[in-house]
Amino acid sequence: MPKSADRSLPSLSVRIDLDADERIGPGKILLLENIRTCGSISAAGRAMEMSYKRAWDLVDEINRICRQPAVERQTGGKNGGGAVLTPFGTTLIARYRKIERSVAIAARKELEALRKDIGRSKPKKSADR
Image 1 (tube, rainbow, N blue to C red):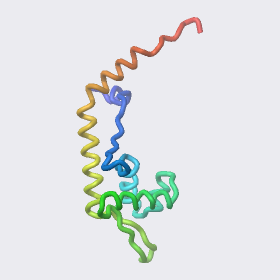
Image 2: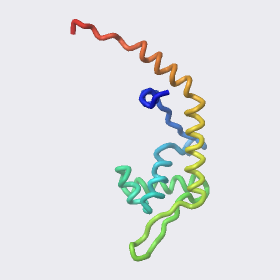
Image 3: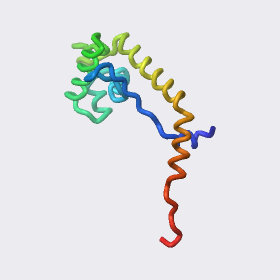
Image 4: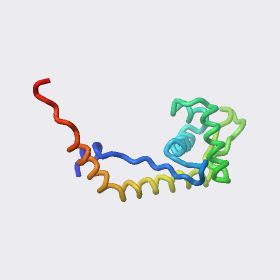
């Protein structure tokens, strides 16, 4: 299927509810990916246009609900501190992205059908307007 057709396909967003109040979703995973890329919580937050406090609160929440750290802060050094993903954090990202891909593959036919249904249900524009 041409890429242009893929772009018009509705997309899914995966949120994993671990408990009534504990969830992992695309925002937290993107934050972890940005921490891996940027090397700090503050830079990762800025990349997502969020405050350091919000980014730190999300990291704290991830570490708490997973019951093991996904991110560790580093202090000192010539460039100051930073943050790194733990091996668990790297695995968490990989597992989430694998689940996301699996869901997208499983839902592809239904998303294509939905796109067609929605396309048929749009009102036609009148030539008189």
